[in-house]
Amino acid sequence: MALDPGIAGRLKRDAQGLVCAVVQQYDTREVLMVGWMNDEALEQTLTTGRAVFWSRSRQEIWRKGDTSGNIQRIRAVSLDCDGDSLLLSVDQVGPACHTGERSCFDAGGDLRAIDVVTGAGE
Picture 1 (cartoon, rainbow, N blue to C red):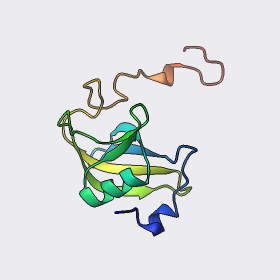
Picture 2 (cartoon, rainbow, N blue to C red):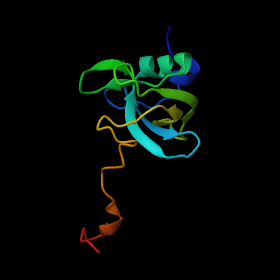
Picture 3 (cartoon, rainbow, N blue to C red):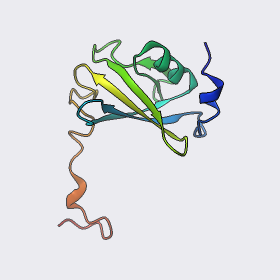
Picture 4 (cartoon, one colour):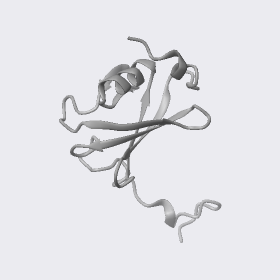
């Protein structure tokens, strides 16, 4: 199957044909991860109810959780006003991050202590 032309026409893809997808836990609104989707990944996500992405490192489609068991069940998919990013509202089973953390943002460190103008710490 191909992505619905009405949806495909609204997407603004990057030079590789990808759209950024922010993944958020549906009930807590916790941001879990960011992935990338091509038309095939988005079409599979919309039709199967599971999050599917394009792996930029492996250059292939991958369905979240097929090897780890840490699946993302889709609750809603929204397109932003510019058409260049998606918001996936999911029910996350297990950790979302490949490091084993609940969120890919758990281990990244809090940048609030950095002065964004000068770069100096507080």
